[in-house]
Image 1 (cartoon, rainbow, N blue to C red):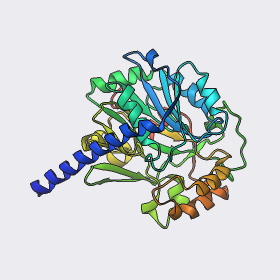
Image 2: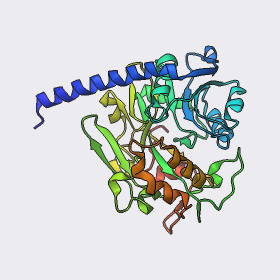
Image 3: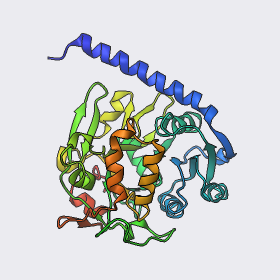
Length: 345
């Protein structure tokens, strides 16, 4: 039997934590310098995308093409210490509003403070998609139904958010061996994923899901599974100024939002509509980028604890194995129980 006093104390703590996170995001607006602001073009029914990036000119052309095809109406980007052509490229896009910052990525909660401020300012009562440039959202019927169709169905079913499995994609052979051309679909270079070995549990007091597994868990974190990457996300949310992401897009406050998804159906039996984020981290530049990230020390709460992980990625390991599955489409993921259609026929 749960202790009522303990529940009230947990609720109080979570409420004040949420307020602190929102307040720090509002303060973080001072970090941002406007490059181009086209938010006056946003219409009431638009689905918005929010992204923080650094030196992603290689991925940006396909990223924009992918989400435009799904129906994103406007992109709100924050570039952090970017010194490649990303700024000029994005500033030239008519459906992009762009900010730059030289502030610490780590001190901004890995960019979450900046995007939360933009959501507070521009996303209230709108459907907001928060994704990294190396994440490509897939959901049931995404080849024929837009994000507007999807969000209308979610709203009709009473959902405030849609959960998604971050599915690590990888090539066959060492990570630095394939070739990739900017603008190309990265799934052509990274066609494989792990279909199984996922596990999930709930954590207190925020009731957030903790889903782990996939190739990084299988190859590098096998002896320390508790440190394996978190793979559950809530990327699509009908935003409200009272909301805050707690740990990237892995968890949210208020805690009830974390209960919008229990994980992949094959694990949890949860058949509510969900999607997958095809994670394209392992393009051929991953070895170079990992060496740079290790030197910058801007990722992870205790980055020095992950030096061995960066060294491993810098060696361009081979993540392929006999059980690897070649990606086909959303129907394949639905049949495997990795995503669900929620009865959306």
